[in-house]
Length: 398
Length: 118
Image 1 (tube, each protein chain N blue to C red):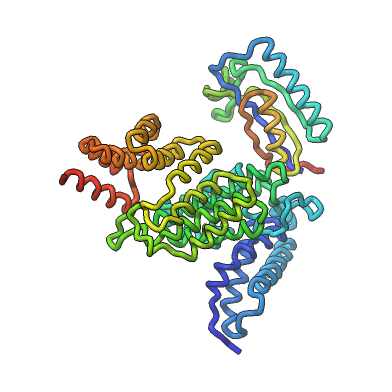
Image 2: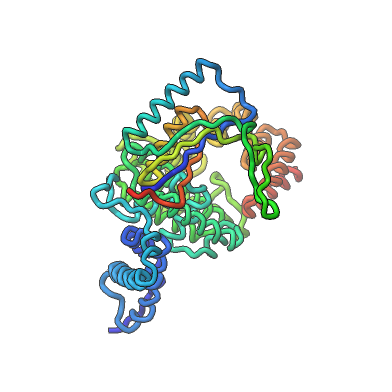
């Protein structure tokens, strides 16, 4: 019986899986992408007549494989060497070294290989695992389309020519390489947070995929928890005029309880594992915020202890800045300002925004106004700018 | 198998290591080369005389012009090369990591256009 067919939804859900299987089968990313796109084009033609098959992903993969085989046979007749040269290096089954067998995991480790430029890792991951088009990715990162297209083409050529392997790294390299993968997913999430919702959902999907495929990696759990807890505040962090609403001023009734519950249960799972890492600790900090019914009820002592732990893992100036915010709540703005003043973060708008707030709380309004201005000079996000502008004006009025 | 070139990137204005440090680098490189041979990854390796010893040839109006080198003055120059065979980039980078440790210098890893026969 014909039925309404949402090929687009199947595409979004299954594109990455289909490409990952075809890359292993064909040993070439471009051929795999072409084959999978061919198969979806065929689905658009047939599914409205036949209905969606019981296993859409299986149908797509089988069709793509047959299409690719046909094409390779045709080309092999014409130019045997070309078909052979196109084959990327795929280790045979016995050479499998990684703990997990899912092809999508191989694909994500290849896309996030440290030999590729960070921007290329992000673009390839969105393209190959998320099925986003080059124009979509270019728009999300405010890069001209030809630049993004060239970035993707070059990265794929490097994978082929330098023989970046298609496999999950061996155990000895896994922690380092996983950090790289998690960083790419978090970068996609943050870009989404800045105002491209489709990237947020893509990052969450990738985060869930990593947790499914690597259930023993607590940092993958931590990253997913961190993203869920941050995303739970999506509706509360901007008001109806598009102005950023900072955490203490948010209407907590607008927080998404379902996402909070899921995020907090993941944080508890991490705590039971007792193998802490930076993403898990950041998630725990967000979980403490989510626990508080009001901003005043926030357990800042607990948050400060978590920031101390985070500092031990990643002693960066940005972590120190966030820690100083917790210090302001537990030990007062004067002590926090001392800590902030010692940081070398002049180019970072948040540094100036935090300083401005501390100065304001200390009654040093003139300096606070100057700091809001410094923050405005450096901030790019419109919602943040509207917020900073308002704070600055409020101080000028008093 | 794929051929890779490991290039030793040597700073032009750096102070060269003292005799003792140099002796240690030589020992480490010997160990590294032995390891390459034992693993069947060895093709060729060697250090180069400085860029001031270079001579450049270039085509000019159907002739070949000879000039004192190097081709380009840079902040770094190619101090030595190591040519290896490896199954993929991860394996090549593992050799590159060892080369970096042995030479105490940056190493650039690049694939050759043609693959090794075995």
